[in-house]
Length: 429
Image 1 (cartoon, rainbow, N blue to C red):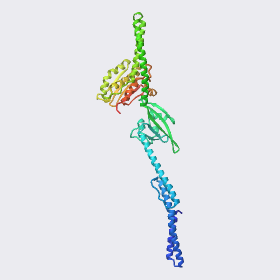
Image 2 (cartoon, rainbow, N blue to C red; image 1 turned 45 degrees about the vertical axis):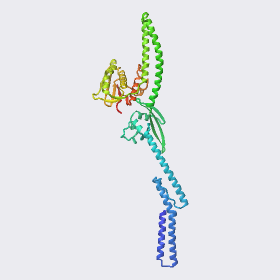
Image 3 (cartoon, rainbow, N blue to C red; image 1 turned 90 degrees about the vertical axis):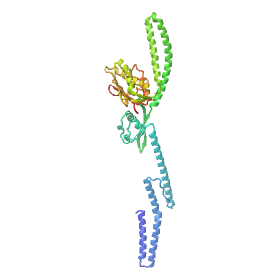
Image 4 (cartoon, one colour; image 1 turned 180 degrees about the vertical axis):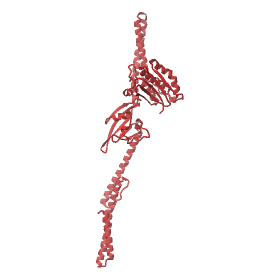
């Protein structure tokens, strides 16, 4: 029997005694006894209510507040020292829990805002299989559409080179990933414990600008030193060789020819060093409104001259309607020349070698039917001085990368199928 039932029994007994006293026909002392018992039972009911029922109701109310997580409400005291002490402890506990909840909410809000504005991509995988969080930077890096909610999706449903690298990454490890569009990422995998389970998460950092700046400073310093030392040396050597050539012109033509060949080679070396130095000194773009159709049409004879001596056919597809883009025409010409030249060199080994340039309102694509590029090589092609040709110097694509990056143009170099290599430049954001 609970307290409320006992109180009802006491009240019922008091009523019964009162009714019995009013209807009793016996001795007077019996009537007084019944009345006294009724008063005592009423008094006991009041005492029982204030000493037992009321404290119990406070305790039950506190339990309901805890169950409902209503930490703002406080319990009123009941006037009993022991019970009031418990109520004080309960109220302090509720105040601390409310403060802790507010602190956690503030931390969650701060963390959420930091993740929203962070340039680092963060991907959290709830159970190692399903995605539980993807911040805006990660959505951009992984090319997740805005209308797609990735939370709850299986991690293996995402596609791309970055995702493949994330899957292959062991716990508490990091790696650097270079893509075919010269983008560089640092991907790291970590984890945290929650409810006794390990929850992995990935951090994706874009290192492209930092690495390019470091590379530019490094190879710029090396080239400037080389240019200064080599040009000083070659100037003296060339002058000496020219003098000796003049001396042996009449006495020994064979020696004179050998000296002239050495002199020419020295001049070629100086010119090569000069080209390296020029690659470091690419000026900042001066963008103007340019009709790419007219610009590329004017360049067609020069581009054909890059391909024809190598036995490579050059084909262009340029629309008649103007394609207006804001860029630096001089720098873009230089980039296109380097791309077509590389394509012609790749396709020169084949009898049906072909370079094709296609312009649309949104993109410029230059393709060739050379041997193609492996994924491993494609990730290194935009690295300074990296080349796959014995006679190459590894600066052509570096120049292209610097020019296109300075224009904020997205680009990629891929081989989607055998003997089909594409250099695609996106002309729109």
